Amino acid sequence: MRDAHAVPDFLKPRHLAFGELVDVCKDAFRTNWVRFGLTAMGMVIGTASVIWVVGIGMAGKEYVLRQIESIGVNWVFAEYQGGAQKAGATPDPLTIRDFDAVVQQVPGIVAGSPILEIREQMAIGTGHSRPIYILGVFPGYVQVRNLLVLTGRVFDEADLKARSKVAVITENLARQVFGSTDAAIGQAIKLEGLPFTVIGTFKERVDTFGQSEVYEYTLLVPYSATRLFTSSEQVKQLYFLVADPSMVVPSTSQIHSVLQSRHRPESIYWVSNLTKLISVADKSADALTIVMLLIAAVTLVVSGLGIMNIMLATVMDRTREIGIRKAVGATRSEIGLQFLAEALMISLAGDIIGIIAGLSLPVSIRLLTNYDLPISWMSILIGLAVCSTVGITAGTLPAIRAARMDPVDSLRRE
Image 1: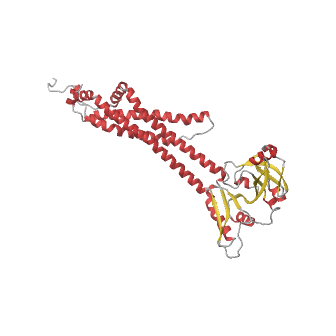
Image 2: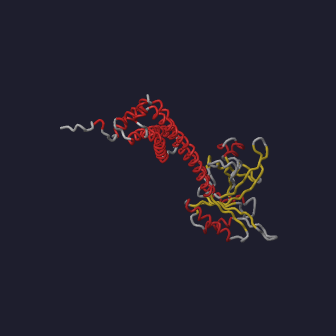
Image 3: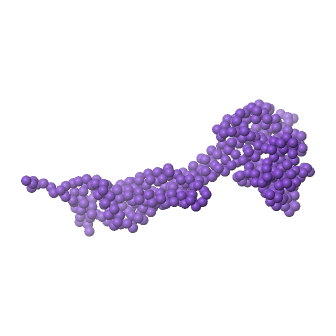
């Protein structure tokens, strides 16, 4: 026999199942789809911005590092800096013998070259005399500096031993004097009154804007041929190429020790590499990416405030619904969970659409161009985590407000 005091099943308190929670959220979205859609747009823009910013930052970082590496990542260079000298003491510059000593005593050097610079005036173009720079080097100089040979060839060890009067000239000099790089091959150019045959043209892989020893009008000639112009063994710089990037720092120290041991103690020699430049560029690119990422994160925070504002307005609009649900047995936690779930679903929906929009740019660039724009999967995880956090944070206050509503007062409202 049924108990007369038993509570009907539909009035018994029960926990809201996950499927029912999803259905309730769907009904809310269908009823207010314009409001919720516009709110989610902020999350779409914020998430896509995070992916774009990180991708652009990574692309910029790779570009800068490639530019530096194009100059010569395993390159070590040495130069005489002077130093405190006694009265009447002569300068103590680097010589070709220092180059030979370093090659013999420092392991891991695969190529190198001394640099002997000679300046001369030459009539170029309309006849105006302009300075040109003659660099006496070894054949390994092209490998050390990672130069790009455009036409012809570079002189070799045979030319160096024979003191051949041949030259490899810059692209700009070839165009100004001979009209083109192809036309320059085989032509003669006078240096210090001696004819040198042009056998090739070259350019730097990365434009250093005159900040290296290669200028607009530069000629490379065998070091042995420059000895026709000077009897001194001194050189301006020494360049070395080591076998592996990990050897650059120790080799730099070893080269400095060898050079210092061969000269007076008071003489100063600057031996350096591009490791610090790469490190600075790496840190600068990372810092710029972080700043841009923080700016994009502001969009997500603003979107979170928008979600909170919409959810608070939704709580007020659905006061009567909340009262009815409480009257039939819904608990505070179920009411709060409903509105928290709605806020979270708005955030996740915006995040998913934002991820799709964010990935569409690098994927499109990869498909339509030859440039491989990097994609950071970490930025996707960051966007998902931030959106979830923002959704939970933005939905907490409206959920608490809805859960604390008195059912009697809620039912009185129209």
